[in-house]
Image (cartoon, rainbow, N blue to C red; front, side, top):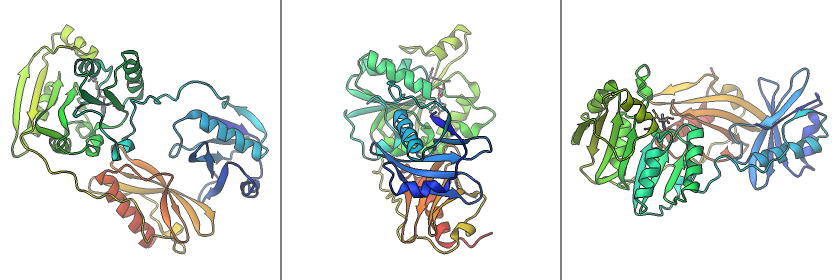
Length: 394
Ligand SMILES: C[S@@+](CC[C@H](N)C(=O)[O-])C[C@H]1O[C@@H](n2cnc3c(N)ncnc32)[C@H](O)[C@@H]1O
């Protein structure tokens, strides 16, 4: 990722340069360490750069939490900032390139997109953890009237399938590079015909990481239309029994089990087990009723929250853990007397959100964008707001 190593310099020049800068908007100094954040606006994007002083060299680099998708925007911003500050560059990797942003295809969707997305097809199916994508691509080719949403946590697999979508000229797959356990919450009720979960990682030693869980099942039943099916295919005996137990934990359910059923398409993963003559189990869970529409109102405004004297000292230093989620004020940067950027982690333990909160004399907001609209994030947001208003110190 783009960065510059520069000769140590007097960082007080940053403040003076911000007033005349074409890119820099503010800077903040960490309260407990030496590093700084530099706020930047460039090519229509707002983000932060980090400056990390060290004896030999200062490192100017991107900030993970706010980084824009296009690497070239970052490189241009680093270049401009270093020129405006007159920095002496020791080493750099910011030559701009013509390579496409890795996930820039129109078939790649960010989780945030689902807050306002329009579904281009009436029928929708979801595949969780599509891996090499063989089954996803096969289904999309065979059912051009259905939109297939593939969710894959592993970025190179997502990239590979995006390439295949273009090569095979498909227009009915969306790829989401996210954790499937949290994704279903973004979908409206009764929208899906099928949810495929083929060969999920068994996680025998860390069952809490399994995709199938009571809450995943509950969300699946909400997003499936009446008569729609959740389809689990697994080679793991343990996972099969675990899933059956989970499926039977809900009050009304129709479950069908098959053993060693051949599908029309075999994934690379499955082919390996077939060569070893391993048993393969299919479990189909049918959704038997229509669900209520999602009504939850999620609002990430901080309303009356604003700076109160000394809050930067009173916020809890350690993570606060609640049932199913947490909040952690990780670092505080001071921009001016009553203006702070607070770096936080919060939300679910599996897929925490990382955000900055800009706390000012009269207001408070997420910088640069609010969290993903999930219920755990909303619960965490309410706790964050309460702490910023009322923290009493440790
Ligand atoms: C064993 S592979 C199976 C891949 C494919 N379904 C097949 O049948 O060949 C499991 C896949 O699930 C993905 N995965 C694991 N946990 C996930 C999660 N929480 N959300 C989305 N994908 C996940 C992994 O990255 C991996 O590609």
